[in-house]
Length: 93
Figure (cartoon, one colour):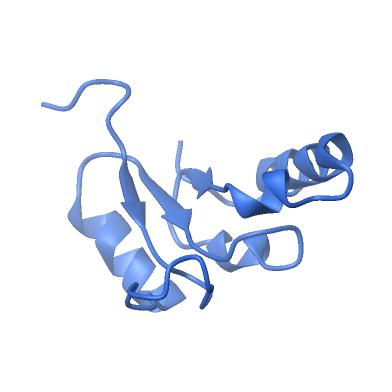
């Protein structure tokens, strides 16, 4: 049984220079992974305001983002924007 804080990060979902060795994962592959495991899955890799929609309907529970926040010109605005978009998506609970 998993602990409540356990999660599986899957990506890179979008090709990104910060993860040059990552094998890109398609939304279909992400969906298959979400169905195959019993712990929450979060998407990672290249996710920011204009790409986060790739998670919608995949079965992912959320997103792990770094550059989307730390490289933002307005960290507060972009963080709120990501949270708003994620709250409107069909994500796993």
